[in-house]
Length: 292
Image (tube, rainbow, N blue to C red; front, top):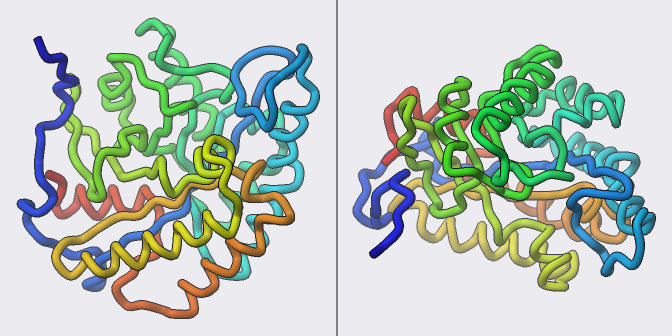
């Protein structure tokens, strides 16, 4: 007996209708910046090295560096390159890192929801508690002045009910399903919910922490991915989400490699590329009824 999620049917990318991004462009690229907080002495968190004791000062402080230093270093880079991002915000950032979420908002970044904190996974929550958590996160982030329309679950973790609850709460898109290079539509109990591509490959956390690669290799992955997608985009419109974590790619020795590849891509000014946000992709898809 097979087990299916029943959220989307199989669809080969070569069999879908062709369409354009705004202005006739063919490859949509967005930067998804994970602004995350973690608990001290307990809870989940990426590890630079195996934890020996609790409180785990080394790993906690490494992660906290991203909010205190790394995020601001990346913001400076994005300012120089006039790049807006999709700011994937834990709602607890508002209390734990005063001014960080506001800086993202003020520079014109899209504000998207990334749960309450990254100390807990969403997938093991019971439905009523998950429903309340989504409502609480939405309300807190809306205090920045714009209600979030996109969601990335902490640890890419979903319960069986998550898409239903997100659609019920009025979310337009989710980033948890990295199953395609085009936006697709997920079936929910409350109508359609867009899945916008979010990469688990062009993502600094698995690349550097799990696979033990370094910044130059990761920058090369970005360069090669863009090159390959540009070679395909005349046949079909595509999306590349570049996922970054300030405690990883915001380290001083890694920013130069990231800066070189992003500068190279920006200066090439390829007319096929649409530098955008995940939310703008979702708006375009919905307005033109494009998702499979």
